Length: 223
Image 1: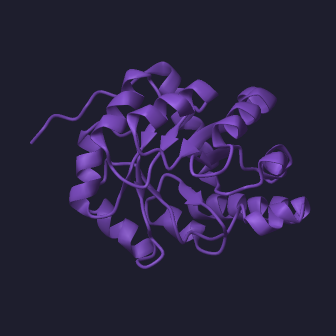
Image 2: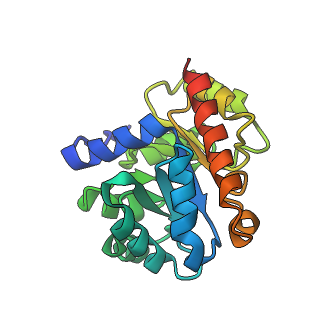
């Protein structure tokens, strides 16, 4: 069995600590670029200070750059749907502090490690989760979990207790506490949190309410 890649670095550790503390990664997918700052402000008011902008969103790198410059250390801004080493480079040049993918690509992970930036590759089966972890992942995005629920995270944690898992795809404010109780270190929340329709209609009070519901769910799961 291959040796696990060393991943202990100060800058990376600080980012990972923040993500674990918040427990929610708010996923901005196809969010209107001109409304991204207001949307992020609403998330922050609701207690969510980690945002992932997916690279298949129009103007994604510009959004990452604007969010990073506007919020500074008040918010962790990352990039999602990062599929190639070149995309990693683009995301990091824009200011991304964490890189997330729906799949496991060892070259993507290696590029993140070379730049000392956390990598959250996607995996589903135990073999895929272990492959991602041994390849140098800092946490593994278990995706999608909509069809399996929190019990699947608990089942994975049985034989793999040392691998940090971040279930994504099907996580809601109503079930996020169950995912945390099952052993997840954090959850990824897309349309159930950052709904592009809510943002497009400028319903930022609703977005803040959703963020607060997720934050409360995480606290309940850890209580």
